[in-house]
Structures are given as structure tokens and as C-alpha cells.
Length: 112
Image 1 (cartoon, rainbow, N blue to C red):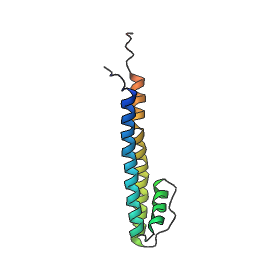
Image 2 (image 1 turned 30 degrees about the vertical axis):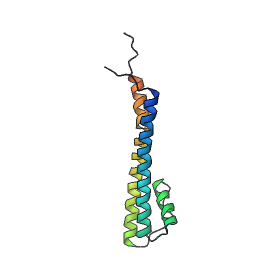
Image 3 (image 1 turned 180 degrees about the vertical axis):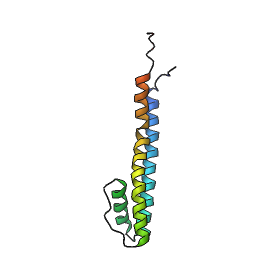
Image 4 (image 1 turned 45 degrees about the vertical axis):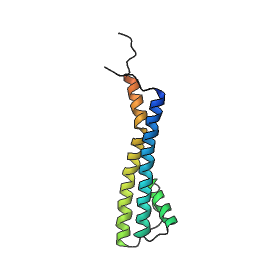
């Protein structure tokens, strides 16, 4: 038995909550990247922000690390960033996809 779709107001609240979770994931990922680039690659905070933001958005690195630790961090952060980008997209759009799938299966109340 199907349940009725959420009212628009509750759907928008759910969408806002998932967007907040997604933004939190992006912010924490950016902070982790900035810290790693600052301490392991020895970039200034502004350059660390730029590098972390470029990697997190999928554009690629700006600075090339010289140290072994910096290279390991940069590679690991790049792998993490790809997964984080996909996860964040899924978290943000999950309520929209759920509502669409629910719409396709919603009971119209008519007997066939």
C-alpha cells in the first residue's frame, strides 16, 4: 500500500536538511584538505585553500608537493575528494529522487 506524498513544506524542509548535511560534508572536507596542504605541503593558508578547493571540485591540483608525506597526502586527498563529491551529490539530491520515485508509484485513489 502506498503512502501519500509529503506536503511541499515538509519536502522543502527535508531538502534543506539534506543540503545542510551536504554543505557540512563539503566544509569539513575543505578544512581537512586545507590543513593537510598547509602542514604537509607547506603552503600558505590561502594557497592551501585554493589547492584543496580545486581538488575537491574535480579540477586538479595547483601546487605540486615536494615531500614524500605531501605527495601521499595529495594522492589520498584526491581519491577521497572524488568519493566525497559523489557522496555529497547523492545526499543533496536524495530527497528529490525519492519524491520523483514516490510520484511514479503514488496511489491516485482510483480503482482500476
